[in-house]
Length: 128
Image 1: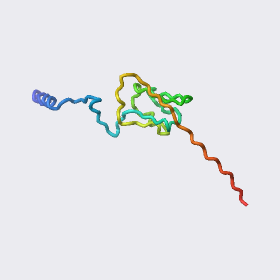
Image 2: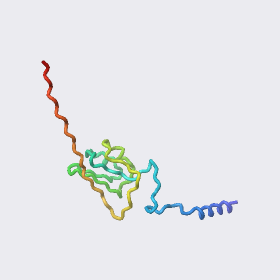
Image 3: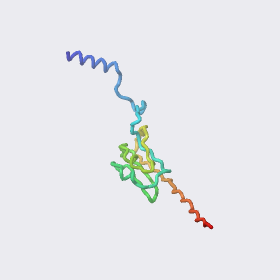
Image 4: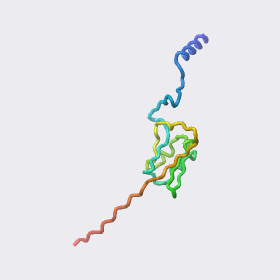
């Protein structure tokens, strides 16, 4: 009986085609829960540094004086801790995977957040 089970498995594998995809020529399937890569919006970042402290693999570095935020894509494991910890929603987790690279590149972003000015206080009106 074992021979018939093995023959059935062999024939199914021969007729079914390959079990893998030729990525990136054939893109991977994604679902709503897919963690592809971290995206950064420099216009909303306030240089708090929570993302760099929460990153378990130390892929994110922040220079507050120079207002430079950088991520090392080769070190990032797409765990999403930085996204969950960002109070200003400057980081998002995109579903698409980052394109394959052949060189080690660290992405640099200049933080462009400008603190809004507080409205001038109105002088107290004197009542008669």
